[in-house]
Length: 118
Image (cartoon, rainbow, N blue to C red; front, side):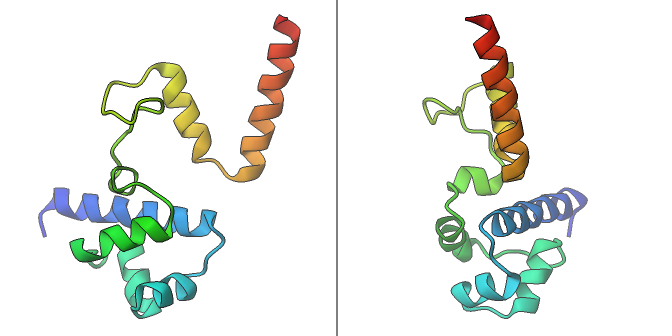
């Protein structure tokens, strides 16, 4: 496997693992939904094995991601088009990747700042 392919599949696996955990799913639960062995999913998540293209649509649906999100493509938050994101949009996208508790903390901070600005 070429180095750039290794990197791609490792990052794809990391996105799968992150989304799976965000949904509160175990590897076993997601593997069963995909009709694969838990160990196979574990190999996908660490980039040790290539995720088959035929599985991507089902995986994206189960993890409530678009294919673009699953593949790591930035999607314009407001139009769904591939356009350069503003700094604020990039920050919002980064916040969306945080655990729920940290998202709530950021939201509370923003509420406080906006309340002071009024």
